[in-house]
Amino acid sequence: MGHEVSLKVNGQAITETVEARTLLVDLLRETLGLTGTHVGCDTSQCGACVVHVDGVAVKSCTLLAVQLEGRDVVTIEGIADGDTLHPMQAAFHEHHGLQCGFCTPGMVMSAIDLLNNNPDPSEREIRAGLEGNLCRCTGYHNIVKAIAACAEGS
Amino acid sequence: MYDFRYHRPATLDEASALLADCEDGVYLAGGQTLVSTLKQRLAQPSDVIDLAKIDGLSGVKALGDTIEVGAMTPHAKVAASGDVQKAIPALASLAATIGDPQVRNQGTMGGSLATNDPAADYPAAVLALKATVHTDRREIAADDFFCDLFETALEPGEIITKVSFPLPERAGYAKFPNPASRYAMVGVMVADLGGAVRVAVTGAGPCVFRQRDMEAALATSFTAEAIADIAMAHDGFNDDIHGSAEYRAHLVTVMARRAVAPAD
Image (cartoon, rainbow over all chains, first blue to last red; front, side, top):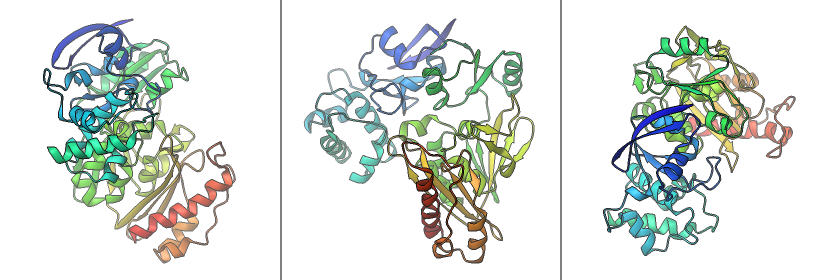
């Protein structure tokens, strides 16, 4: 059955008709073509699908699109300022905080939320803050370095 | 996921009327259990009734001798609440160990309690702290709320609105988390309510329960040593690939000691 849902995605107001069972990540990827948000495990473990809803990080594979009525969603595509990378993206680039890159969008979105809540985290706090994000390449070390550098730089 | 009818009521009355009219309806709070359950086709409700747009169900209130947590308050808000950290630090630190940061931003206290997952953290806090579960119909004492595996005292259609926690003199929570899911293999909350000590165990059995031998021992001496020799029987305990019933029984005493030590 079709449901109309109106929300903001990366600052743009959109209205789409979705099935009740449509997941937010599918609305983003399939309907809106925002394929930067990835689906890794599809069981809310891996964090590749992390986006921000009203400014906080959530797993878009475990939200129904209809739950987003009136909410403000930001994806990895929405954080750069034109050609200027978001400071967290720049830090990941600078410190090579990625190997295959599949987990990166979720890592970056989680990392931004982490610093929003704790602008000066210890290494331990960064690692704990990434509990919900898995990197199958096990490239955590540089991810942690990138987040620490971003915190220092800001 | 099977499809279903979706509703977004604006009031509690509208929500319960919708549920009463459904063939097989279910309420949606944060969805961190329900959406996964639907995706795995472990449930096939005819209707999903989203409680997110009902006013007044979210937030923390400090009321002097109690802390009230709205049913739709996400775990992250409980963990970060200055009022909770000050009045019941063990409750804030428990909330900070549920799932992962993204799950904590979306999952809610009411959803967790209504689900009553045998390995969830909040049931241990509600039972040990002798909280009261408020619904759209009545107040339910913690001792009467948790009935069995995924079973609570909630009647069909009844909605949790808030939970009120009396302030303990001291309390502590320790859990041995499953390394993948962060659910409790065993979690133990101990609370000294001034005159009465309560010990609640989650993750070990089919439903959260009180460990009365430990309560009696801690009432005499609120120290880890007082319960170090209390062995937990493992009859009826969960036994799965993550740990045997005997292992979980052993963990109960270990976690209880760890919960008491910082609370002492």
